[in-house]
Amino acid sequence: MPETLPKEDGSEVGVTDFARLDPGHEREVALIERIQRGEGELFYELIQPYEKRVFVMAFTILRNEADAEDVAQEAFLKAFKHLSQFRAESRFSTWLIQVAINEARMWQRKRHREIMKPIEDSENEDGTYTPHDFADWREIPSEALERKEIRDKLIAALNSLATKYREVFVLRDVQHMSIEETSEVLGISVGAVKTRLLRARMMLRDLLSPGFENVLTSTSQIPKGKRPWS
Amino acid sequence: MVIGCEDVWREISNYLEGDLDPAVKHAMEEHFAQCRHCEAVLDGMRNVIELYGDEKMFSLTADFYPRLRRRLAVHVEERKGSARPWFFSLAATGALAASVLLAGLHQGAIPGQRSVMSQPARRLPQGLVAVVDEGKKFHAPGCPFMHGKYRMVTPEEALREGYTPCTRCMYEALRTAGRMTPEFGEEEVASSAAAAEQ
Image 1: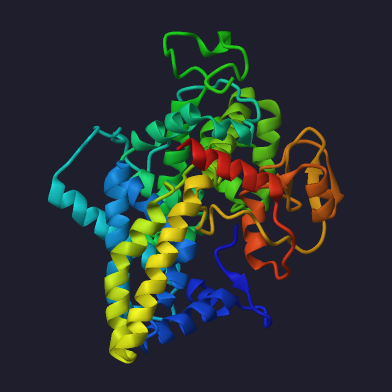
Image 2: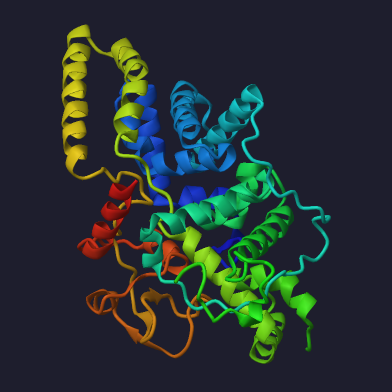
């Protein structure tokens, strides 16, 4: 996926330019100006598309729904109080997610909580990740997600990753941010985003592959697609 | 160009991003055609991305929005109060309380789905989309998440045939699409059912 968009004159534009080209961005900037002039109730309209995204980001870091909701509320409140600090050259969503991440990290530091020890990646990020499992997956139907136990299994697998991998994976693959936006939100290089994304995807694939539930069983003996989805 | 399994594992994520030099992409596709293990890794990773990218994966509880609104209300009213006469604030507070009450009553029946990721899609991409007969999603041509032989249909036809949009390639297309169309009814039902289960 290209990191930049072509301009009419053949040159390319980056994320900042993209924010200006986005018609939704102009609408949000106009809303923010009106809120700052005293139309505070428009803030609900401004944040409505991002309520779930902010909650999911907080949950990604804290791994607890109640804490994530508290942090999401704090993040929205902080965004409201500091709206004057938002710079129109960025996307509002990017700024808001950054506020949520900071709030979640502060919350975590205050609580000193580690509910479960995440899988720390012992390898250097530059090293090649070797898949642990080569079992075949059939195409997974989206309807599987209507089953709570499947969603719980996926969330447990995600929560077992180190925070640095969870953050990148959720921003790119759950929130559908671009690689560049992810890099901007987390303040890390595009290369680091790509490396962490690769490892996060690989680790999740290993954790969820059909042979995972019984590591002593040879994956070659497991009929295709039998677990954990069928 | 010939590449080995380790090269494939290093680039497999970029392959799914469509972020590769054409020669490397071609070499990887040749490798996948011959290497069952790497093909399995590719399929698994593709499934991981699709599952976690599905809007049904995460949902807000029914009372998330009323609680958030209550938390923000005092501060929002303060700012509004600084620019408006007090009786406007009083009237707005009453209206707010009524709307929170109504929202609560409404959510007793059907949980609210308010964020952009939980709303049913309301827009369709311009032009034709690709569908695979055995598949369930429609894609933009060239989407790496599409398997097998595909045919091109209009987005409306794809919907009528029961296909839903691919969360990867269609996300960008829907974000930039200009025209509004009827909602994807089935998706809305599915989202509500998933949220109700919470």
